[in-house]
Image (cartoon, rainbow, N blue to C red; front, side):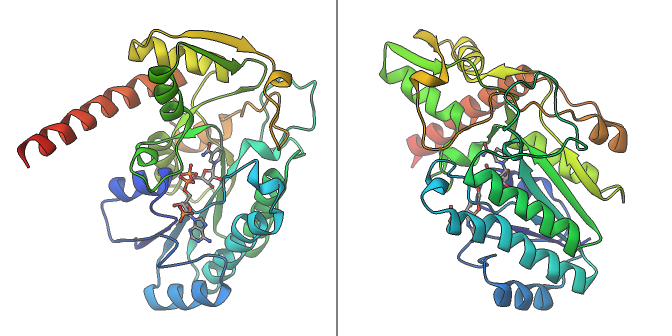
Amino acid sequence: MTTLITGAHGQLGSDLRQMITGSCTAVGRTQLDITSAEQVDNFLQEHRPTVVINAAAYNSVDQAEDEPDVAYAVNALGPRNLAVACQRLGATLVHVSTDYVFGQDTSRLMPFSELDPPAPCSAYGISKLAGEHFVQSCCRRSFVVRTCGVYGHAARDGAGKGNFVETMLRLGSELDQLKVVNDQYCTPTASLDLADGILRLLQTTEYGLYHFSSDGSATWYDFALEIFSIAGIDVDLLPIPSSEYPTRAVRPRFSLLDCTRYETATGELIPNWQSALRRYLQQREQQLSEQQQVAGTA
Ligand SMILES: NC(=O)c1ccc[n+]([C@@H]2O[C@H](COP(=O)([O-])OP(=O)(O)OC[C@H]3O[C@@H](n4cnc5c(N)ncnc54)[C@H](OP(=O)(O)O)[C@@H]3O)[C@@H](O)[C@H]2O)c1
């Protein structure tokens, strides 16, 4: 298996790079801009991967409302370019999408399965949904994996754009009191687990659409509470409704993903979000202490 990872410096791309043991080419935007059909085609013809994992994305949910064409270029046309090139080569494509393809159903209380009709309520969600359609219609051997609330270590390296865990840890050390939204339900997911899930799916030929998130449910307030509890940070955390924290883009009130299809295809049960978060924070502490030791000896 010869793998190509696009968007390789993001959260998911970085974890994939470390986990793939065989032949792997990992490229960031400067080496391969997926919005250029010509670049994508030439690159794939030259490197001839058997598997392409698209970890590239435009994830600025609020900004997408002001530049929907940019979001569409990266999240819809980019995957289309990859899908067309993969189909031509006979390669397998893994594309990652989002729980934000749901959200218009504001009375929803049951996790969404792959059979539920998507109904996005933001420019970002629309662009990601278009990307899914292109991949599924242009590439026969494709996996589309929807996920939710991603956090990974690369967000700390300057390459990433931050994540909720890192933002909470920073704010928790700067402020005495924090207000966090308590009426939007999703499931935080570590990019390390998502990378592992993708590699497990690739061991099958059960192509198609999958939901993958950690197990369980949390509001952003629940998530923040758990972060501060595990990290031992004492901050006065107040739950607020979304109406008190207006954002440019409308976000789903409830976007839990039912991951049964993934678990059936791979035979793997996905652990809960609290244990994934604990592992992330332990690894984070270890990485920071190793960096301090290196800085101390330099
Ligand atoms: N983050 C979340 O909470 C979340 C939630 C649900 C689903 N997802 C999905 O999960 C996947 C992985 O997300 P992530 O959090 O790992 O994303 P990320 O950390 O933001 O990384 C995305 C990467 O894509 C690169 N990129 C942007 N435009 C590109 C282009 N035109 N060509 C090539 N590369 C480009 C970015 O490079 P630059 O830094 O140079 O822009 C960045 O390195 C994405 O499909 C995302 O939509 C994420």
